[in-house]
Image 1 (cartoon, rainbow, N blue to C red):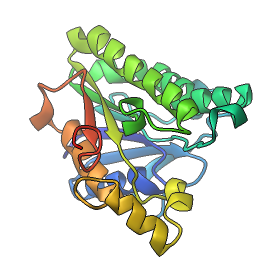
Image 2 (cartoon, rainbow, N blue to C red):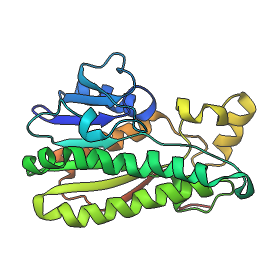
Image 3 (cartoon, rainbow, N blue to C red):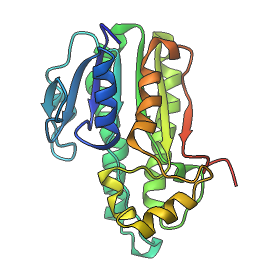
Length: 233
């Protein structure tokens, strides 16, 4: 990753932070954006509250050429359908979909300039596998998958690749309420064919690979990293 400029949005915790650490070790030049500066990461940081500020204003320290963009923010808003309000759906859509669109808009010119870039978005296994109480997040993440495939087709002539990672339950601060005690953690393990829930490093490893030139023939893919949950019974 020497000589590669990579922007990670949401690098202060969870998968984004694990990815930033891996890319830093690989020699990438990092640019980060979010509400807080990521700890332990050498980066040009831009403060961005996705719900308050347009990305074109916040992402104001991008390099002339950008080789990778990773949009990590997400939501886990789990409620029965009758308890989900239209505001729940709007918030999930705004953070998961419109935030990604805004970030790509703001960095579009410098990504195309690279003539060999990679954009990574995040979905969820719940967009493929029907899961109760997931309707709001599933709607939003299904839209992310559609965005990723459409952009992959549109940007292929410029040699810009777009892929979407679809994890299952991963041990991040966002998912902390689902893994809050030994009983919950054991139940989460048993739901996965590989008998464990994910770690940020599990997801970050694939993300890092997709940002390298080794993955230069991979685009338009929804890649499940889910301990087998999305495909195995």
